[in-house]
Structures are given as C-alpha cells and as structure tokens.
Image (tube, rainbow, N blue to C red; front, top):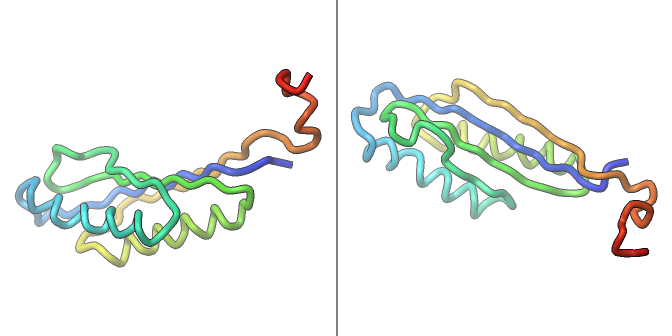
Length: 112
C-alpha cells in the first residue's frame, strides 16, 4: 500500500479572440490566483506564457488518500473550466503513488 499520492493536473486553455499578452494575462491570472486560495493546491502557469491565445496551467497536490487527491483535482479542473472566459481544450490527470507502507522502518538506514 502506498504511503501517499501526488496528483498532477495539466489543462490547456485557449482564447483565440485575444489579441495580446496583457489581455490574456488579465483573463488567466485571476483564475490561477483564486484557485490557489480556494483549494489546497500548488498552481503554476507552465507553458504558452509568450503566446497570446493559449496557455497551460499546472496544478499539484499530495495526500495519503487517493480519493481525496482525485476529487480535489477534479474540483480544480471544474473550477478552471467554469471560471475563465476561455475554452479548455486539453486536460490530463496523473496520480502517482509514493513509497510503500508495509514496513516503513525496514529500508530507513537512519533507524539502524
């Protein structure tokens, strides 16, 4: 059984009607900032920072509960999709197990 889980969500948003970077940032940045406040997540603008019509937003969280990680990322994806004046064109979720909790003392040389 895993000790915990790291969940990562990447979302590509597109806004082809936007004509410049300043306008795009004004649409994306507030959603990213509100997402950080609303959910226990780390959020970053990952790609498309110099493109005026698209951007990739990355979201990460960690917990010992797989269901909680999955649900939190789902709520974040839903929030991003409904809060911004853009189209979500791609979404990907990856949840990775961490370690093994069978015998946590067995492989820790600091405990010898």
